[in-house]
Image (cartoon, rainbow, N blue to C red):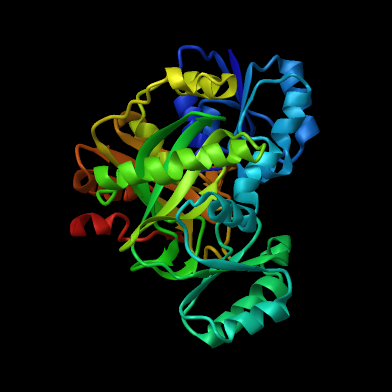
Length: 423
C-alpha cells in the first residue's frame, strides 16, 4: 500500500521510520518532509496547510492511507477535506481536534464530565482578566486558548508577572490569534507525565508513558519550548496511577467526546500532573507528541499501520498494543538562541554513524539538503534517541550519541532524564 505522511518534524520522521517497518507498505510519501525523512519517503513540496493540494496529490498517486502528524492541519479540518473525497485518513475531524485547538473547550469538557483537572476561569476581555487576577492565589498559570507551538503557557509567580502575562497573550498577541481567549488556571505541583493513546471513537488503547522537558535550560530554567528532550517509560507512572487514569480520565474523555457528537479517531495525548491529590489533566493534544513520539515509537512492537487502520475502521478493540520491555531517551539538539532567534544553514556532520548502530536514532526536526549536504534549518534540529535495558543505560547511550553529531551553534540540555535518579 501507499502511505502519505503530512508534516516536517522529528515526530513525522519517527512516524515515517515506524511506517516503513510495516510489511503492508511499499511506498511512502511525505509532505513536505525533511532531509532525514527522505531516507524512508519521497518528499513532496506541498505545505501541510494546503488541504486541497494534499488531497489532490493523494488521489493522483492512489494513496491508500494518509497520516496527519501536525496539529495545525488537524485543527484546521484537513481530515474533513480528505474524507469528503473518499480518502482514508488517520486523525481526528475538525470538530474533535478542538480538544487541542481550544483550551477553553477542553477545560469546559472536563468540568462537565467530572474529569479531574485544575480549577480555572476563561476570559476574552483583558480588563476582566486583570480584575480577576487582583484576587487570585499565586502562582497562577496563563494559557493562550489556541495553538501556540507548545509555548503559549506562562507560569506567573506574582501579580505583576500575571499582569505582564495578560499583556503578552491578549494585548500584544505574542502568540497570535491563539491569545484572543485566555484561560487562567490554578498552579498544580507534582510530576508531569505524558501518555499517548490510540482512539477509534469508542475504544482507547494507551501507549507507554513518557516525560517531556519543556524549558530551554538545564534545571528547567528559561523559556518554554516545543520540547528539549524526553524519556520513556516514566518511573513515576505506577500501576496505581494507571488504574486511576483508566477509570477517571482516559475512557471518560473518549466517552465525553462521543456524547458531545464529536467522536474522536486518532491519537489523544494526555498531559498529566501527578499531584498530591492524585492525577490531573494538564492538557490534551490531538496527535503524537513531539518529541514524545521519538521515544515511544522505537519501543512499540505492534505494526503501526494496522493500528492506524483499526482506528479509522472502528476495530481498535481487536488490537493489543505491545511495547518492548526496555527504555528510551531523546535529547534534542537545537540551534543556539532557540526558541527566540537562531541562525540556520550550518552543515551537520556525524549522522552516518547512526546507520551502523542498533538502538540509536537521529530523528530530523529542522534540517534541509544544502550544497554542503544536510544543514540546520530550524530551532530544534535533531532528536538524538537511544534505547537501553533501563532508563539509566538509555540516558547514558543518548548522551554518548549526542557527541557523534556536530554543527555550529549546537545546543542541548545536559539533564534530560535526570529525574530518573530520583525515582
